[in-house]
Image (cartoon, rainbow, N blue to C red; front, side, top):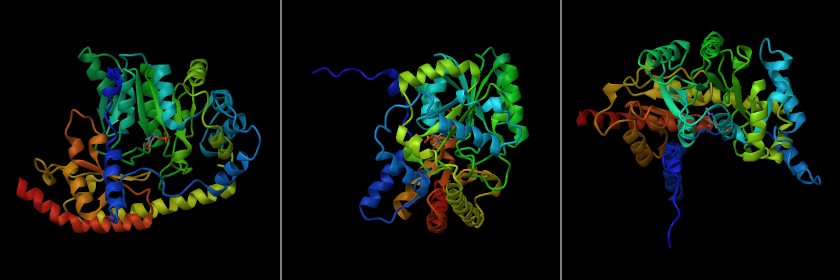
Amino acid sequence: MVVPKVSKRATSVPSFKVMDVLQRANELQSEGKDVIHCEVGQPESGAPKTVAAAAGESLSVRNVMGYTDAFGLIPLREKISQHYINKYKDIQADSVDTKKIVVTTGSSGAFLLVFTACFDVGDTVAVASSGYPCYRNISGALGVEIANVKINSEFKLTAKELKTEIEYRRENNIKKINGLILSSPSNPTGAMLTPEELKGLCELCDEEGIQFLSDEIYHGISYGKEEATALQYSSNAIIINSFSKYYSMSGWRLGWMIIPDHLVEPINSLQQNMFINAPTISQTAALKCWDSETIEELETHVEKYRKSRSIILEELSHIPDIKSENIAPADGGFYIYIDLGQENIAPGFGSVAMCKALLEEEYVAITPGIDFEDPAGDLGDRRFRISYAGGVETAKEGLKRFRRFWPTWIERVKNAK
Ligand SMILES: Cc1ncc(COP(=O)(O)O)c(C=O)c1O
C-alpha cells in the first residue's frame, strides 16, 4: 500500500506547544496527581446561563438548525453593531453597518478568511514577538511570510517598532510588509495599547498601505485601562473578536469580524465556500450575550480574573530573582508573562526545562515562551506564561507551589552555570 503524501504546507506547521503541556498535565492527572492548570487560556466558567438556556430551547424548535446567511443571523449582527456604538467612543453607524459584520467560526475561522482574502502566497505579515503563535503558524500554512517585530521594553509593538522594521526593510531592499496582525490586550503579555498607541499604528498602516488586522478577543477583560478599537481610527482596519474569552464560550466556536467595504464580496464568497456559516446553534444562543443578566454574570468572571491576577503578581513580588520590570504589564486578558532574564537561566536550564520540572515535580502546568517568540531568537527559552483563567483557588495553589519550587530550581541553574 502506498500512503498518499501530506502537503509540505501542513508538515511545516509546528504544533501549538501549550497543547503538548496540556497533554502531559492530563496524563499526570489521569495517574491521580493533583495537577494545577495554569497553562490553557480558556475560562473555567461555562457559557452564561442565559446562553446555555437559549441553546437548549432552540433545539426544540423545528428547523432552527439550518444554515444561516454566510455572514450570520441578522439579529446577531445587529447586536454586535449596537455593542460597538454602546461601548466605544465616536463610532459612526455606517462603520458598523451589519453588511460589514461577519459572524465567524471563532476568531480562528476569521483568521483563515482574512488571510486568504488579503494576502497572496509570498506576501509578508508582521507579527509581534512575543505574540499569539497561530498567527505565525496559519500564515505559514497559507504560504504567507512573517516579519517578526520585537516588542519594546513595555512589552508592546507600537508604531515606532513597526516603522523601524519598515525602514530597515526599505533600506535593505527586503520585501515590503503587506499586513500586521496584533492582539491588544496581548496573548501572551497582557499588555494593552493605549488609544493613542493604537491610533498611531492605524495611521502608520494606512500611510503604508498595510492591512491591519486588530485582534480584540480579550476586550472586556481589562483592569482599569481604556479599551479602544481600531474601528475608531481606521476604516481600512479589520476588527476581529470572539465569544471565546469575555463571553466564556470557547467551545461554541463563535467569533466575528468587522470588515471594510471592499472586502465584503470576497469574504462573503470565501465564507460560503469554506464554512458556509458559523454554527447556527451558537449564533442563536449568542443573541442573549448582551442581556443585562448575562453581562452581570460575565462581570463576576472579570472580578475573579482581577483577583487571581493580583494574587499572582503579589506572590511573584516575593521572588527577588524575578525583577518586576521583567514581568509584562498584565493590563488585560488572563495571562502573566515573565522574562527570567539571562541571569536566571543556564544552558539546558531555561524556561522550557523549568516548566517541565515544575510540572513533573509540583504538578503545576505553565507554558514556556517558545510558542510565542520568534523561533530564530532565544527568548522562547527565557520567558514563560502563567494563565489565570482557571480561577482564584487555582492561582493561589499554583503560585504557592511555584514559590516552593523556585529556590530548588534556581539552585540547579546556578550549579549549571
Ligand atoms: C490572541 C488570540 N486570538 C485568537 C484566539 C483564538 O480564539 P477563538 O478561535 O477561540 O476565537 C486566541 C485563543 O487563545 C487568542 O489568544
